[in-house]
Amino acid sequence: MSRTASAQQVPANLSATETLFEAVIGGQRVSRFVSDGLDHLVVETATPVRSFFAWKGKRNYEGRYFSATTGGHVVFESHLEHDYLISVDADPAVLAVAAQPFLLIWPRGQAGGKFHYPDFFLRLRDGSARVVDVRHPDRVEAAEKQFALTREVCEGQGWQYEVWTGLPPVNMANLRWLHGYRLDRFAPDDALRRIILNSFSPGTELAPGLRRAVKSSGEDKDRVHAAILHLMFFGTLSVDLGQPLSMDSHITLAEVSCAS
Image (cartoon, rainbow, N blue to C red; front, top):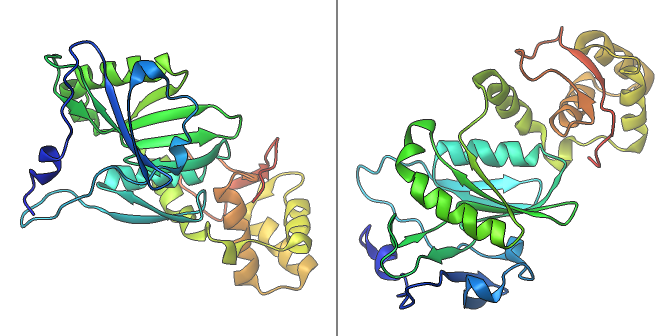
């Protein structure tokens, strides 16, 4: 299949004034004008509305990320999108995430392109929603018109809209390392969790806190260390991610402990 196939499958929008919304939700194709209302749709359960195609010399890196947030795989099509999914997993405010969740087809003759596929749709724990486009900072200006049109649609539905360009390098490097411990197999049971939290209350550096937790629990050091990193990733244990992590990093309890 050619790299232009996905564009050829975009339905025509014959309206000169209305934006058309296309998605696949619950296995059913949803097609309606934005003005008919979208806020009641469970967009966070949408399956990708388009496929990714590979070809020789393609520069994008794409794949599937196992999300602790969804408990399943979420597709991505760049290293930056992969980084974004890591940051989503670490955000306790996010309840669900869907990739390539819908297609917006602009009114006929609209300046700024014919259509747009936003990258992600997030449902937050407070019930609100957020639509996110992920772009390298150098590519934001070229897509400003698309982003402005998308923001207008989202705000009309009561959805938040964000263009995500990445985190500071040290923050992202720390999250990339910690996210390897996000899986349930690294999560402490209730007893070990209480011991770990007590070991970092009041706050202390990672090394002495780890020693204290190992001594109190009688558990294997590697097991306890992995559990601590799991709690750090999800924010139950608070650490300054703006500084390189080490055994000297100062760790405290988060003001509001997360579910993980």
